[in-house]
Image 1 (cartoon, helix red, strand yellow):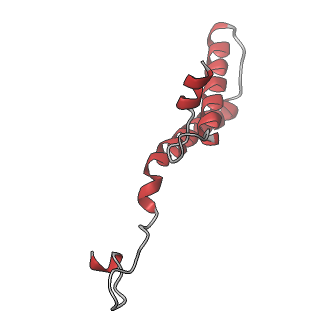
Image 2 (cartoon, helix red, strand yellow; image 1 turned 90 degrees about the vertical axis):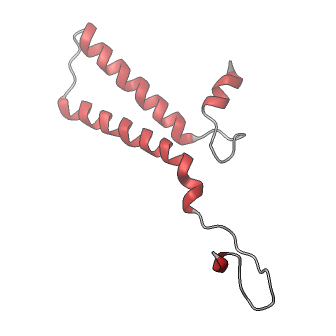
Image 3 (cartoon, rainbow, N blue to C red; image 1 turned 135 degrees about the vertical axis):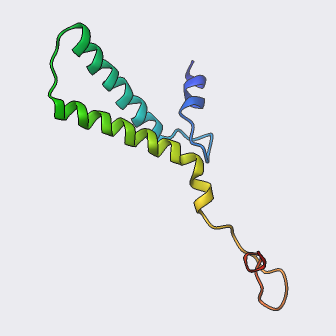
Length: 93
């Protein structure tokens, strides 16, 4: 069971490391679900601004987790010299 959780929360760039963004997003989603269930079934009330803030935090955290997949695209490719006339591989493209 722990191995399954480690693969679910694994970092996209390093699968051996657990992503803190994914854990934070998971905890925020669980807390939002608890708040909604408490409001619907147990008649607990929550202020609208707290619910809106929690909803926005969930949306932003899931956006950051989704952006992890594309983080490798933003980093430039490493360049290396390929000839003696100071051209790099990036200059050729």
